[in-house]
Image 1 (cartoon, rainbow, N blue to C red):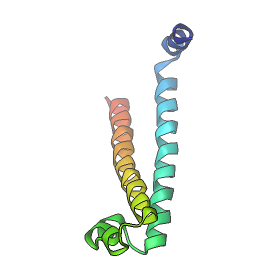
Image 2 (cartoon, one colour):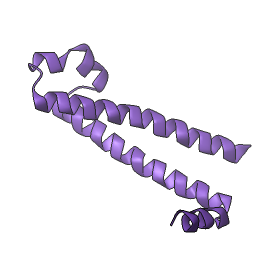
Image 3 (cartoon, helix red, strand yellow):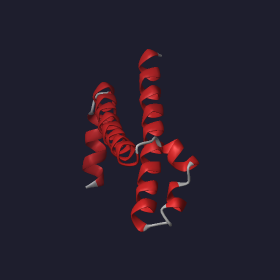
Image 4 (tube, rainbow, N blue to C red):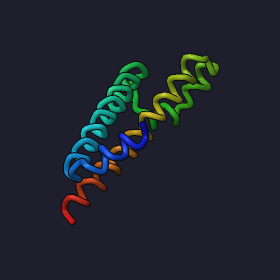
Length: 95
């Protein structure tokens, strides 16, 4: 299976690989931003204020709030990482 996949990738034009990566990054970005928006609405603040106000502690470390906090933080990190990857792809297109 690996050899078939490897061969297919090697035969793909570079532009097609870049476009596939770009679309995947955009898909992830949408998912991360939707998660961020959901929690912003739920807690009526952004993640930075959520952390500063120690909402997890104020809510007595409830499972729901801790879980939300972890998922939200992963989404924020994901947004940053995907934007970095998209920039790298676009910078390579320019070079």
